[in-house]
Length: 411
Image (cartoon, rainbow, N blue to C red; front, side):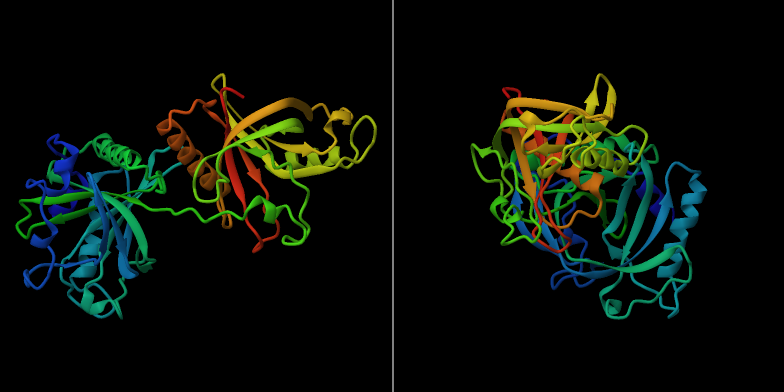
């Protein structure tokens, strides 16, 4: 049983070797020596996968839908609290389930770290792969905090290491391994990964003397965005508004590439979100458009809908804005919380994506970091710590286009 606790306290140890040696590093335990196969009939059941690509120090794998059981482990509490949770899954494996079955040991042992908004570890999901013989009808655990679930098929980027068992665990050491994988992915111009979800798999020999740790980042493929000519066209998108499209100076951004876009004669009204919900800021902007201005005039608002987020002078800022059609003659707002902005020319670096956005902040933050990595690797200069979101999407289920953008330094 202490093995599980020690695995949670694993200290990652790997000698520095050239990238080209990584895939065939003899010091790393090979999966063929752990998992059951035609050449290793006494091996353990392992979650099946298909290797789609091996490149440098990482490989890309596809995992099909399979049943697992997990339990949430508290983080930063007393060790015996964690031990109680681990015992629960060990008990499940040893017959404490609704079929009274004793299940074989399987691999990988999977740990899924969940983080708070401040990027601190909140808890860890400890996962046990259901043996092949019971995948069609897995036994249910008796413990209410253990749960059988079926994982959707997924693609993952994986980098292996040798590990030693050491109770003096440092999470910073594990995080550095994820940073190494991210570095390898960026070197290969791979950016479609979930940078905030950090998972690791563990495999060991039966005597536990040699173990393999795999650092795992899940692939998050970008849904292609609807073209601007579609989302801004009333014939293809019901109730579509007129758009300020700007001038694309490079690609159209529909295939996951960064688009360099120039806007001329930009007139916007904006307001900050300060200790309140976005809906109140949106209401102030809409009130201005509806006539809450010095001329009591109704204005024409263009797509995209704009929000901005960032840090200025160490202070976090966020707000909403509206692009005006006839901004050069726009009257001043009567609400002192609504401001006006005009610029003759603005250049943005834009990353567009499609699909429905369910978690607004998490989704846009992920694409913002992806955009920054792509620009940094292309040696582009842009204003850091400030980004805008541009929304063109109409009704739910219709043509979807979302954009995250940063301001070019030579704008």
